[in-house]
Length: 373
Image (cartoon, rainbow, N blue to C red):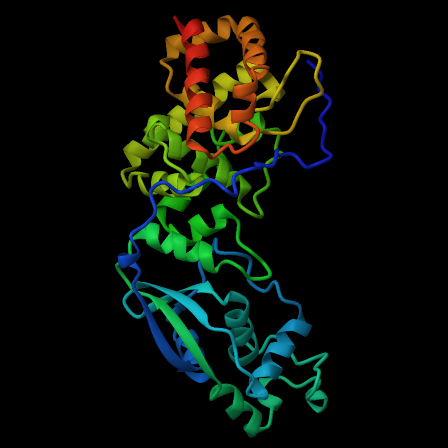
């Protein structure tokens, strides 16, 4: 097989045609529980000072605004201009987690509490250029502290599936979160740590994901965690139970990650076995399309990763050995399978549709069944 990699569009094949996939199991709107709270900037800063507001580690990178945008936001407060509403998630008693408004919250913390930057490139109050919080006249400090804002607080106890849908709907800012960033913002704690351990570990076993994907899956927007979620979602729930959309299915799968370390190890071992089998059979061509043996090496394909990583993980060790023994024949037949129009469509377009998800998983398992006996 050719080792040449077509990188014109990046290292991971884009999943297209999923925008119009209907959600067959929508959440119950009666379970939406949001409290509207009028507040002042001063009260919000007070909660920041007393660490009653948390910024999830995985929500998105804080401080993405440059100093011009930060300064202009502070200028808006000094001018008493209206500020967009904030969304917070009440996960713990009296502790709010930022859902929407991270850059504004971060800017207030850096300017008022940490005093990390001074105003620059202001539009109207140019006489305040170079001023930090302590240099502002009392009238401007008072204008900031007394600025009225509205908080939408997602109440404690709101079902995670409902929260996830709310997060996704309000994620319309200039820096949108990826689906995985939304999941990890929502499902913080040991579940996220477990996903990290599958693809970012430092031990020999944990490096398998990096090896089998050629180190091409980036971590900065949590693309690697999205691959881990794909495996966990289908491994723990079974493809037969798939209902659109993919995002909700992966969220439900992540929620099923066990807290027991012993049970987590069982999932890890299965994951590493699946990766080992894939790499032994396909080498650096693992989880990529191939329509003939002389094709240039293609981008990583998440649908192929889904069907092969989970199918291989579910094999008994002796079944994996038999499959590997016949790897040349298996590769040839997998290439033939990808030349089938229906199968190719199922890994190329509208991949989160129910029919296409079931088809690709069923056909992959049918092929594996031929070689594992």
